[in-house]
Length: 231
Image (cartoon, rainbow, N blue to C red; front, side, top):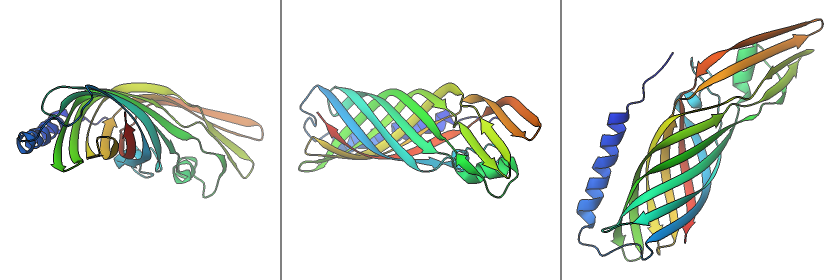
């Protein structure tokens, strides 16, 4: 089953937030003293929707993991910046999904992890709200480059395995956060895409091997809660 991403809604929401920040921040002076800013960040990667589900038709079974990344920004006037981000998230696979797919109640072995890379570009707007404290909002588009978990488990003398495959799709995201002392950040970012992956699931036991192949769409949405340092 394929699902369409509501891009117009996301763009409208992001532009509305940016416009609100611009209106509330026009009386403020420039926010960031450097024209070019570099930021490194890390934090939690929380899967949402089908990506986190273990029971939906397009379940991904991803569990809460971690994200690391870096950003490069070119500041314009009035707190507006061209903002480029590369974030890499790692989310382990929930064993409940593997058990459900294999039709078993208990399996053991290596369940693997989802890896998602998000190269994104867009706009960032920052506005002072107190001395030394600012809020910001971002709206970005880009790519989702993902890899499926490599699974190798066993149960009752049977072995179950799935290869890791990579794919990519259009992605978009928006976020908001705090900037303190022009240096430290704490933020929330929502990213989403829908790549199509090849699949290969193999079951083997005494005297037989069965292999299932195909393709599947995987809605992939993540909320990233991060802290960072800006240079």
